[in-house]
Image (cartoon, rainbow, N blue to C red; front, side, top):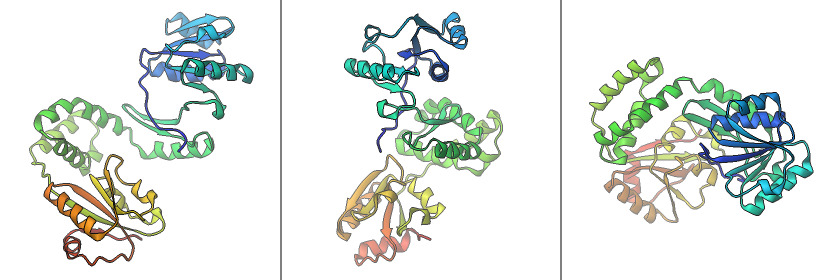
Length: 313
């Protein structure tokens, strides 16, 4: 993974854009959506950008770029000209003052890149190949656009509005998480089209006790992640702990919930000890086991006999 994925808050923070052509127009539109404080430097700019200048949405410095225009007050610098030598000079100058820079369409000179985005209000899905395959990313975005309902935006707004109420109603993080997991998976959600309908379902859900209890899901894997069942993937996303032998391939572990604690073990005794601890502390656990793996530890066998075991395909 070359680029570390992150979302950066640049609202009212200074950003410098070098260049005023078509490429700059596209990037500035995106920066304005994030409410950045934008300064553009170029001998001339497109009429499209001049309209923004006249509306007070960005500052325009008419003239050629020079190093003195750049300071570490900026949180980002964008080099968007069609002169590669100038763009590379902007890159070097930005590094001198410690400001991350993006040279558009020149990945080797980018400290950060902008992914393809799927927007659903507060929910943003970012997709990137690190600049390696833009066409593939476009195809993936098209697939996500068809799968993510516009209803997602309403659900995100609703969740944001209810955060304080949920904190008052449920005293622990586990209870809050369990409530939202249960609520957002209700089949009725798919039929909701209005905020009032969602509110009625929410009030009804609040009257249901949230049970925090231990849960163990044994997920069998083989050689291919695509052989995991949909049920396995769903349960892997609910885990608070992920237990696996050190030999378990990383690609299977990475499919589990991102913030789950990863526990690598070397022996059945270690596994049994962790399972006992999880049981005592009411922790939801995913245990990844290789297809055909057998256990001789009687404690593990006891858990297996009473738990959910999901075989691979």
